[in-house]
Length: 445
Image (cartoon, rainbow, N blue to C red; front, side, top):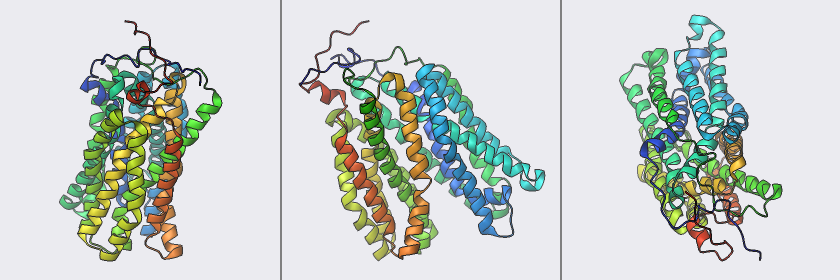
């Protein structure tokens, strides 16, 4: 077998690069935090938003219109991925991240301050839909440039740790959104929540926008100066990267389904299992805590044990645990089984999640890294994130089986495992031990 080469001779150098400043890490991951904060905040207040912008004598029609507006954001994610992600490859990671974050801030503030239907008529729902479309466009272009930046700026043997902070901050935002939503729901009267209370939750997220923009303006560009990745480029062509894209879509699609099935646990507990609402909200808190606690150790482990091992072992355990966990929840219907089952599934999913994102990014060349990753990620989220909860609700309705979500999730996990097994190992520490990687020359100053 021919000896491989590396795109960046300094990427495997035995010296440890300087630690990435905490302020730079915060500037990058704040966009992902805002993304998930807004996602769950909208979900918590979908009823109030529906009454504000889509009033109707039929409450279910109002809610459906609100949820349809939320779903509209998924339509523009792939477009944003191509436009803003591509900008990150042509102009730089930094300007792409600044643009996506500015658009996110514009959209979240715009939705929060849009007058109600009662005040401005049909212009209210039009504005609400427009802001959701802008937000979807911005979010579609966020993940590619920001993840590319982290991998290029971080020390080679700490890339897993730094990229895992993307998911850690997302889950921290989920936790924050859940807590703020519960506080507002308990402190304000229903009429206050309908009229203006839900806007406070959005404006809390908007507060970080100016700080995030200032932090991102101070970043150093990595498109032409950061270390690139220790993957052999000499024999790779379009077919190879098409394979990476296909397998990446399968892995991210699998992870997206797992995320949205576990996020559905609140509705599942109340509607299907007929459990108390406070227990259902507690399941959301457990989900957020599991991610905050276990996302980063998963990335840290991938730097030391390799990406594939840290992806596949937790995912195999997740496959084995899915059906038993849902069966226990449905059979006993108490706090211990609901919170324990939700926690176990969330922990296993969190440990393996970061390695998926890292592996895909490390497998892509610098010249298309931002745009390709953004597109793969956006397609996975748009396709599977926008459909999962509808599909599992439909499956339970036509089959009458409360385990339908478990079967759907188990199938997605199995597909993800197959895709993971076909991906190459990309961790620098594991590549150094490979006899097919040429010894790098000394890095240049």
